[in-house]
Amino acid sequence: MHLALLGWLGCEDQGLVQLDPPIPTTTTTTPPTGTDVPTWQDVAPILEARCLQCHLGEGPAPMSLETYASARAWAPSIAVAVRERTMPPYLVDAGGDCQEFVDPGWLSEEEITTLEAWAEAGAPSGPSVEPLVGSPLARMDDPDVMLDIGVDFLPNESPDQYRCFITDPGLVTDRYLTGYDVFPGNPEIVHHVTLFTLDTPAAIRQAEALDAEDPVPGYACFGGAGVLQSRQITGWALGTPETWFPEGTGLLLYAGSRVVVEVHYHTHDGAEPDRSQVALALEDTVETEAEVVMFYDLSMSLAPGEADLPYSFAMDTQGLVGEPVPLTVWGVFPHMHERGRSIRLDDTRDGATTCLADVPRWDFNWQRSYFYREPIQLEPTDELRVSCRYDTSGDTEPVPFGESTEDEMCVFGALVTR
Image (cartoon, rainbow, N blue to C red; front, side):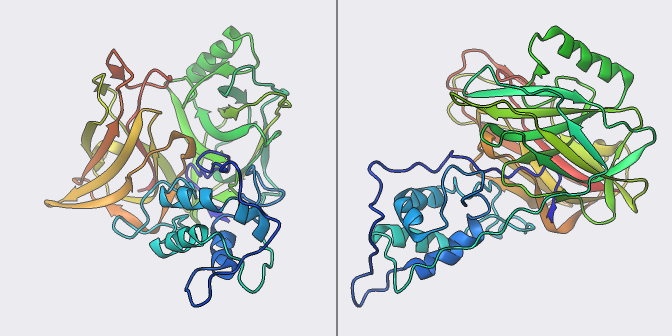
């Protein structure tokens, strides 16, 4: 099982590019006598633990790394990707200087050095080239509700298209979301999925108006439901298994509410239509109601023409929930758009500052949530500061806060309990 706030972990061809021509794969090699060069026996456990969730024969990634021959063909590209930390796609710094996280997809320096040395030596095989064994993703097989986007949708924009679909979970009473799973209709083009709730009749009417005005099924959206009164609750990307909130917690879903399913399509010529579904696990009661709170500044305005532009804002914990109570933070979700370069969250109490999450290299395509190994306690008077950096060198006008591609964000979401 995989804990989730906005559990985005993706598998696609970004960040791992095969060199031309690839290394020949018809023969095996061994390191020179007397040298201490890593072989397949050293590399295989790293790939098996860190890469095979996606890079296997039936997996969502565009290439398999299950065999020595296939991994050897990609060895130079693997070395570059792991050194630049574009692969595995785990953005938050989990090196130990800024919190500890559950199941960190973060390579140690030793693992990176091993992969680099293996590639530099020509990817030697060593005494044997046994294939790797990947584990299938855990899937939710008995959901309480199955959402359906309601149409076989074929994207009409490329290379990327964002589309929102309004779904009805059929809730006649309030219930709590405790887990979910996404079943993409066409894994070749579905990059990630985000869910938003519409909790009021006004919000539902606004989304329905957007849907009615758009001649294509669903309606156009980017990084949100396009409705101010929407509430972001979950997220998913290829390679993510069934996901569950921390034991005893759940997010409240209101009777009569709707769920907007935002799908990011990464398209190509000849693609087949998609009809994705989302499985929800629901409970009538939970021990502790969880909330997704958002740290953001609506007044943000970024100056144009800057290659490395800093921006930050601060707020106290009381401002997040409207009352002076301590909060328990179970996980966080950083969010920026495509101008973003880095994002960080700090907590200051009694003059001492603690790092809560640091993303030194932002990548819009690999957003996901990060759960703490041990939840963090916040006091009502703690000051929380979000610090972001941007590249606005391609802009000629100030960039405001907003959901469209022309806008930007400097946001942290957090799963909290009171």
